[in-house]
Every structure is written in structure tokens, then in C-alpha cells.
Length: 173
Image 1 (cartoon, rainbow, N blue to C red):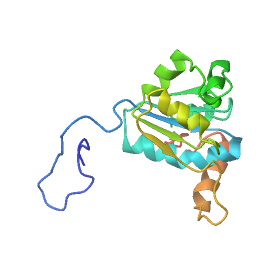
Image 2 (image 1 turned 120 degrees about the horizontal axis):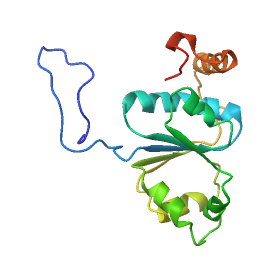
Image 3 (image 1 turned 180 degrees about the vertical axis):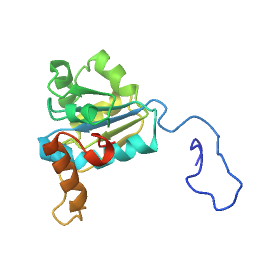
């Protein structure tokens, strides 16, 4: 796959490096997550995987104030923004005139991962209108039949209760 650099494990003493272009996330990743703390905790493993997979890349989270701040606190994101911004409200209206600053913000990311509840695709259609080229959609809540690694969730919940993950030096990254 073009753009990926390095191989995690090469069995021979020869090391291969693919360098066929820029990183697939050179513009960074944006995670969009509404809901309360429990919903956000379920997103933390994905944020940690993104941070480890794309070190040095910009990762931001758009979501509920207070809750998404945990991403920066634990080193999983560089910055957060609030879903409650009045100018963002236009993104929830079909065919609305979209705020240029928000359009530029969304378009600046190589990949946008949304876990936002949007049954009529209004918000997601407006993200595309704003210039988002790669939009990945995840569930807004876990399906009841889905297998969830309960140990991972419990570890994150315990780390939040203790004010950090002592196994990783106070960080979840």
C-alpha cells in the first residue's frame, strides 16, 4: 500500500522500507464522538491505536466538553473542539450554508472518523460538502451482539478513576 513507511517485523536481516509517497494521514486524523463519558471510553482504544500507528501525526477529537478533554490529558490527541459551537449547528441542517472556518477545519484532515449519531446522514453529507475526502463511520454505540474486550474497557475506566494509567507512566497512549 503506497505511503506506508517501514515494516513492523522482517524475518531476515534485510530491512525493507516502502516510501512511495506521503503518509495516508499526513493531514492528520479527526475523531468525532458525541455522548457521555462511557461512550468516549469506548473510543479510547481506537485513539490509542491511531496514536501508536501514526506517531507524530496530528490527532484531534470533536465532542462533548469535559469528556473529550481526557484525550489530550492522556496523550491520545493533540487538541479537542466542542460539538456545542454555535457555528457548527449549521452542519446538522440539510443544505445549509456552512461556516467557512468549520469547512476549512474539517477539510484539513486526511481522515475523519465519526461515531456521531446521524440516522439521516445530514451531518455526514455536510462533512463531504465541506471537503472531507475520507470519512469513516463507526457506530454511535456498541451493538448489543458485538464482542467488546471488557478487559480493555475496565483498564481504561480504572485509569480514569485513578487519574492515569500507572502501567504507562500516567498516560493511556
